[in-house]
Image 1 (spheres, one colour):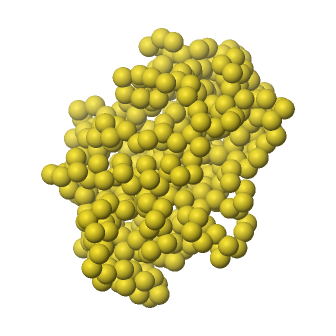
Image 2 (cartoon, one colour):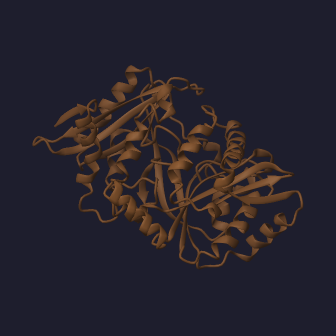
Image 3 (tube, rainbow, N blue to C red):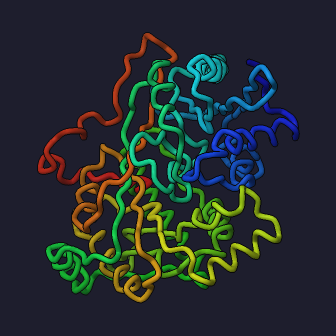
Length: 402
């Protein structure tokens, strides 16, 4: 086995090529866009690299063929008492020694940076993309949601990684009616004069992005120790990249007396098209993408992120958003399914909401943690919120990447 650091154009291309070799005969896997992966490690694109550092490696077997890859990263400024880094874009053949070599290399690098714990597999950025290891539900992956071989679970756990938190994805069949009880709650809040609901428009993009920043920062800052305020410039770039497939009526905002209090964001599942492009978005593939979008080939949606400011987290705001959203979806019959992904096991209220609208748990991902410093005891993320009756958790909703 030969481990090589990614530090040239050639090794970067090889880093992108590794999964294309490993998943060559897996019909479910969808090749992500090369540019999406490259941008994560580009300091001109990823703002996290301005306050942190990342390193990547590729693993070759004895014949020089791709056998694995891994990335390690950390942010310099952290509010948590435990200095935590991350590993991501892990791929490996079914060999514990090969996986161990990748893990050892990444963890040793993080240890040298003073890191005490490592989470993985995660993204060097927001948690709505490339976050967690798939352990249940090896079916079609939505855009941004990780897909991997089932044996990866053993590779992580045999090395010593522990489950930090679980992530659930729910599938909602749009051919089925929402439960009657849910509609009553939704209609009740929609009739209240102080509440209003509006969908996103590109014409007013700056205004909606500002509202999103206000809501997101209020929803997260109250509980997340290493919270970093949402960067509006990053949002503008994301919206610009998604403009081609964006459906304005899939992004909704809630207001109370004109003040932004909640949002819910969905995108058409472009993975249904990317599956045909092999990671490249050249001119010809852009034409293909345009054709597939316009001919309504995409029939799945991914609900990607949601947020409600703490003061209104028990007011039925989410129900009101779903009610308005459903009115628009009834006029888009080519969409058959929504993936609500993801919600953490520490967020029982959102789990209850997804089940209330008829969602069926379809996938489970794990985010693992490995304690580099053995003197620090391992602890699950927000253990007080797990396996406790919902009635005892009233008022403790957390809106994360849903």
